[in-house]
Length: 139
Image (cartoon, rainbow, N blue to C red; front, top):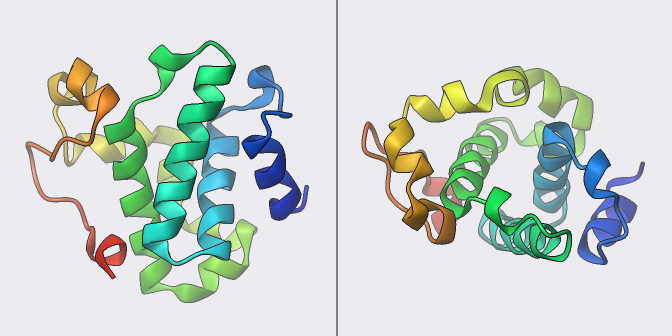
């Protein structure tokens, strides 16, 4: 599906919650970054995901820290190789670790306790292992 159509369906909650898996989350992250600079893309993506979870009765599944951390990592990779923003398959190939084991990637930055803390679900908390690559979100 064309990324703009996908994002419109995400924002209007027309997508089925059952079909919105981890790969769809990555597609949303990539689609927003394709359309907007990293800081705006991250804000729009996080907002869309949290609203989608709320509308579909899955508020407890949304974790703001997890979302923002993964966006920072993914968008840093795009920043280092800008052509990834234009090619979903190239992005996915370059980010296999995010697709197959995002928790392990996040484990480089966060302890399980920090990520599962209730505060991390509601607001961004800084990593407790090493700093995230966030320069792309600051410009």
